[in-house]
Amino acid sequence: MTAFDLKEALEASDSHSVPHGSSSQAAAPGSSSTDRRAVSTTQREQILQRDNHECQNCKRSSGSNDIDLEVHHIVPKAMNGTDHSSNLVTLCHQCHKAAHGWSG
Image (cartoon, rainbow, N blue to C red; front, side):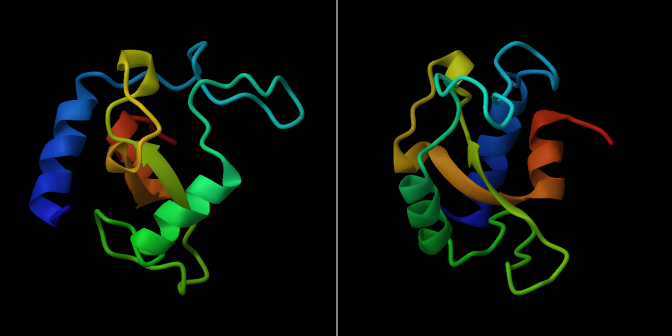
């Protein structure tokens, strides 16, 4: 996926974003494992490796001490997105928040 394709995909997913704090947010640690949005640890590592441990939006890498990489569903699961690798992308925490329109 090129940076241009990613930008278009992220912009398209913005119109389908789930607000922070909604009922489909990730479950808290130790809570139910029925979270519809979480990907497995194995799949998360596969996506991070595929994306060279680099945010696919701003290109910061996990080599930076201040970066926290996350796996983002381009089409949210709440909007019938899947856990297929083509629907997952590595984003840093800042870009992930921006993709969802979260502040703070």
